[in-house]
Image (cartoon, rainbow, N blue to C red):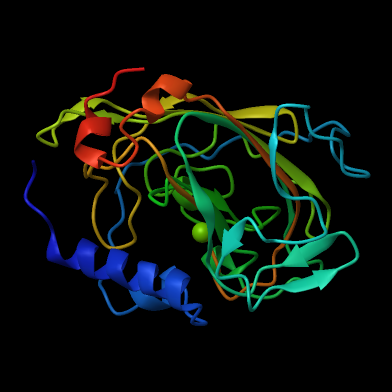
Length: 273
Ligand code: MG
């Protein structure tokens, strides 16, 4: 197992306390105490693509085998939602939240809208994020006519890979993420066995194509893997911007036999399916 990095663990502990304790803190406010790390990669600016009308209107129905995580009515599938605000068929993020259930390999659908009233710039505008397995952030940001570092804009795997294109809709409009995720696997001793992969469509436009995750996504340190189980909670980030969410569902793609040793993370780590 790799050496543990104290700062990253401090941060993870802080995040955990936020979720479990329901405190009105965020990843960013915690990270603000640390020096920022940036990749330094000279990426080209992702070309702007105007998406079609997919998901621009009313929310769609979920597939019959999907686990509905938020249908507009309640957020009982999540921990830490006390500071969220409900409006009509959507909710406004008010704290970082995590699903009560863990997920690994999955197909995830969610709809979000950055604030219609534009405020701030760069990373401070409509910032949220989808943390697969509580570790791997697919960035949510208002990147419509709002430039920031490319591997930190909407559709990026935070500080790892910019989106292939910028398929953002204007602030206030509903947008869709469709995510296909293969979780990383770890040997029983903790070494990486196979990396994670993520494919993302934003508003029906491919923005990440089977991207090989380089590890967890962090504010202050480079990407790095740390062993974890085959199922970890899905998190949504609170970054002090009133981003809206609706219609979140997930299809669990982890074969049932992988649950045989669900009580033992070390045993889970040895599973290959
Ligand atoms: Mg974010």
